[in-house]
Image (cartoon, rainbow, N blue to C red; front, side):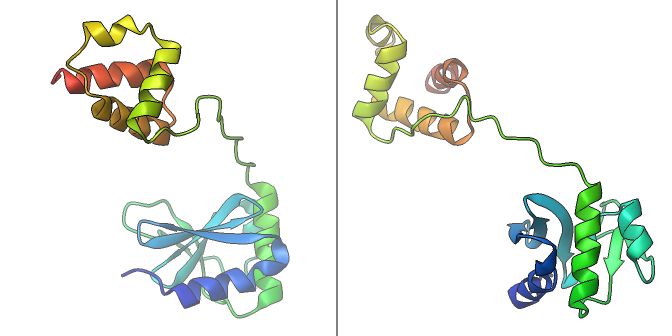
Length: 170
């Protein structure tokens, strides 16, 4: 059973005093973030907080449960109606959690969707004779491979090699 979006918004509103609260849907349930740091989960209309010593010291009652089958135990927060308590709990928990690593965008490029742009883009990096040697490549296949590799942030050389394997049937 997934969480009700109204309940998720209620939890986000209750935690708003801790910082900028955002939620992201993940596999039918929700991850909840404060200033870019994930601090909890909302699963099956229940709020779970990542376990930290700072959070443990503020909890009214410590109850550990996994938010879903196979997960590590989180603090299960039953009393979600006290806004000040929730904000303080989230604020102290987030102080104890590591900051997210900055994302590496060095391999991402502008996405090329058309056959012409894909061909021009590849010819800029590879010798134009490559196309005459490998005439069995279609520009559409190359465009599709590159478009999917851009979405996966794959470096260009492995992306082009991937196109070779796909179109040669390997």
